Image (cartoon, rainbow, N blue to C red; front, side, top):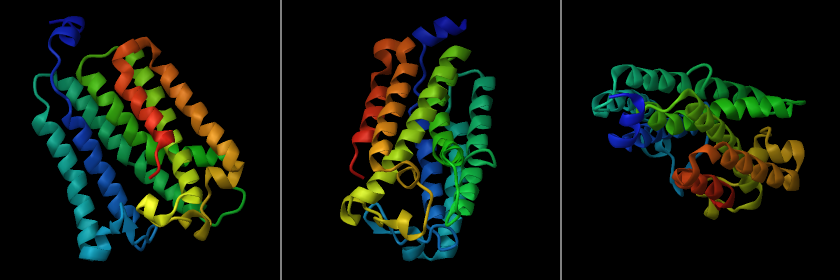
Length: 243
């Protein structure tokens, strides 16, 4: 069947792509909280992995989650041409590597306590640390369903904007919410002298920037019309959330 027919009449279920992204995301949180990284003992309102099980197990748990994500993707993606699956696997690998999550995390650690970090550098960190994984989560379904280059690009633009908006909202919440509301240590950014949007452009400007990014994200999805409703809902939720 050609791409169009495949796209409209035989759409395989790709919900497990979200599970895969969540495995990688959870790995990044477990490793992020380690003493050698952000050294945090609270996450989602409970003690962090290494606090409960020890650093050795937390490191291995993250490794296992990352490996299982790729295994899960290969094992459960049925009924699509192999080259589409390979492209999704490639993008997954890229999203956690040197030009993805790992690279963003390195830059983030290096910028702690550093004077003169620019807004461009901050955006680079979050485009890689946060948005790269969101990008693969959003585009995987489109690629597997046979979307065109333009459609995939629109999904990427949406994901980048939403990823940055998520981080701006995170920086705002770190200043405005309590530890109880957040489920993780509030005021942590200032305590470790982290470069944040609030530190660089102020609280009110940060709120404006978060809304602007969400508007851009929604605009990128306009070619999809009604079908984009769930993604638009996610974008709106990101700036309205309390934790």
